[in-house]
View 1 (cartoon, one colour):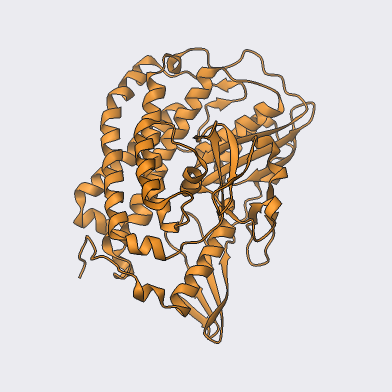
View 2: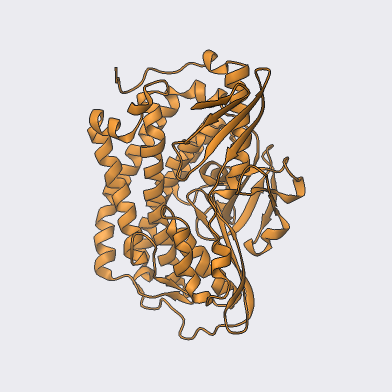
Length: 440
């Protein structure tokens, strides 16, 4: 952290996130005047896609993010299919969902263990040089080993179905380019018991963190916003369904097909950030700022899609209610989603259609159209919208990248916490537990 001036505090670089950003806190007479979340990344992928064949888009767009290429791959191919009015065979849809579940397992485990856990298990007031995954590996080697194993399983499953663990290639307009073999299916079914064991270990470790830091979770960074996420007939879903918007009071304000997103999503350009602030259009800006990602998804869903995850959700709601506005509860929600991802992956592997050879339609004809594809990325709702001409060339593209859904809310939360810490000294009245790892 650096003090750029007596009326400005600059935190750069910002750690514990996947990307590059800084925070600027503007002060006036010792009070927080404003907080800016400065994100400078510019990708230009919407322009890169113009003039390209639509069937190339699912190969180009995963390069937007090396952490989450699978969601971009799938949202892209779904957009092309919507524009060309193509329905892939059910086995192809199930393979795509399986690929996405592998990514969710890997990414959620990475986020919890590498980005979040060090601050909790070492303690937020420990030397910053010690608050990292290497310290966990040194002092809690069993935890680190299990974390890496869970991440590896997720990455390998995504790679198996996607053709590559990073920047997948198998989803094509009309289906999938290759089926899953019975040998691979049988091999993965044998692993699922161990993977669930690792998922439950992670969830139970997370619950200990929740109990230890309960005073922090319920008092610091509790900010009311709208929430957005996919749901399938009200049930939690990553791959398909309608987009739900929940008000800060817990009312489902909208439940619409992704193709209608422009009627509900607004984008606000702010001068201090290259990323737009997304919000619920009927509520206006800034009142309609929303959050996506794990907490948002389980807030908007009526229930989880699998039984074990539903039991974890019941425990969550019994403790924090619905909606939950506690920012630190995102970590708890992330662990619930890992449980569901493992359960749902096993369900798909047990489905006879998962090894069907019927994974793509016979003929795909490029045509003029306008299509929207939507999936949930680990960081939130992801939308690809393509317009194509009669030769199937993309003439226009609009991408609502998952992280963008959260930027406005991140800034709102940062301002709230800055006031808590600088003006109210709230952290001095919060009970922090003794760290699990003693570094001094």
